[in-house]
Image 1 (cartoon, rainbow, N blue to C red):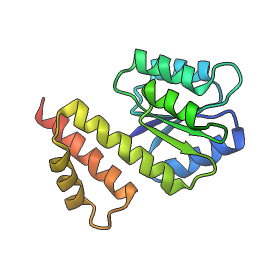
Image 2: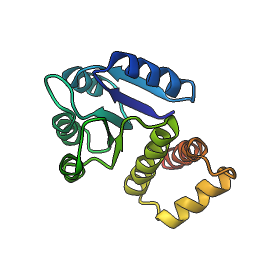
Image 3: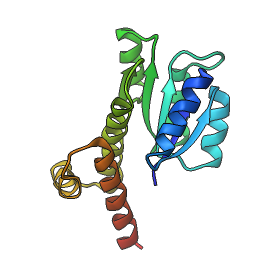
Image 4: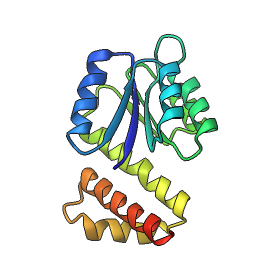
Amino acid sequence: MITLLFVDDEENFLESMKKRLEARGFRVIARNRGIKAIDAARKNPVDVAILDLKMPGMNGNELLQILKKEHPWIETIILTGHGGVDEEFQCMSDGAQAYLHKPCSLEDVLGAVAKVYKRRLVNKYKIEEGRLDALIDAENPKATALGALKAMVKLERNYTETSK
């Protein structure tokens, strides 16, 4: 199961996304402030963090930098309704692997999670990207983002079990 840390100060959006992602099999840790997200990441292993850019107190880019420093394997996605080209460039330079603009669909979010989770597997397990694509395609004949994510979880489980 993939654990997502979802951070957004818009409570209704945060709860809605949490429910929708949990219904698709994710474990979701939802927090409305950066400092709460840091604490949650320190207490729970997190695979992917989805961060709002504009929040009171600590902004998403500051949070991104702390998370990447403390947890190098966390893949990060910025999801914002306020950013522009300069903010996107800065976030990507600071370690974000994807940048989405609100409003976006759940499929857009799932596609971004699939993209960054694939990057995680390539980097963590040193799987050649073409080989990984072939393995995902074999498990995901409909070529959906959710299907790709399920295939990657299965592949990761196989990698961790064979390395024991």
